[in-house]
Image (tube, rainbow, N blue to C red):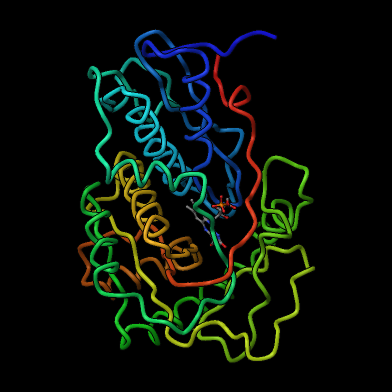
Length: 327
Ligand SMILES: Cc1cc2nc3c(=O)[nH]c(=O)nc-3n(C[C@H](O)[C@H](O)[C@H](O)COP(=O)(O)O)c2cc1C
């Protein structure tokens, strides 16, 4: 058996571990659109152009969000094995797919707060099921907002008054997307998948089908096999929805927003909250613009998140670390 290549002074086992952690990040339709090039002094994070979803994400914005999320996991895992990560933007001379270069800034001991986020990496799930009608305490809401700010992002928690307006946007975006055959083909191809495959969303991780009384719509990720909704098990009437925003709209901002997204999701998990993403509105240009205006016009909406308390959901499979390496 050939041993895993090494980087940043780590052993083969440690290097494999940090790449595995990076690969546990969330991604649109679980396409896992990241690759890593390992060298003695650097780990490069690359976008994988083979894993684009051109109908759903034509500008690769969500692809870069996912790579940013993988980068945050990589940073936390490196810190956990004692390496202080220094992240640089790609050098001008680098390959066009490179999004970040991670080097060692020396030895470190991970502070307890960061350790809690590291430990949440394998436990975090995108939970599409209905949540309980239970309020998220203000200390947790505050912690989610601080997590976004830590990574130079902004988390706007939708107020009760904004929920109706947002619900109208979700229904509009959902209708527009379903009217696009290319979008439907991508959704059908990458969701409702059997458990044994290592990419795409398995049917077991889908939530129940939305019903007419629902305030917003969720996508059917089950390939038509969505579980029957148990009577009385509706989606929560007043969900805690939040819009993760960046301050600008460049490629580097998308990567930064991905790190903020993942820090928010891991913070939620470490505080016992479930979370899921609802991306119809930021994916459709017209509704993304309407959401931007709804938030005052100066923030760039990147992702919509739902938080709450619910029953556990199964793990979604991932590719092996060796399959994520770029030679
Ligand atoms: C940018 C982005 C957009 C996503 N959009 C949605 C969405 O609209 N609906 C949804 O149910 N999941 C969405 N997801 C979650 C992915 O489907 C999920 O991360 C993936 O299936 C892996 O599962 P896991 O997060 O439970 O590990 C999104 C994830 C990312 C990173």
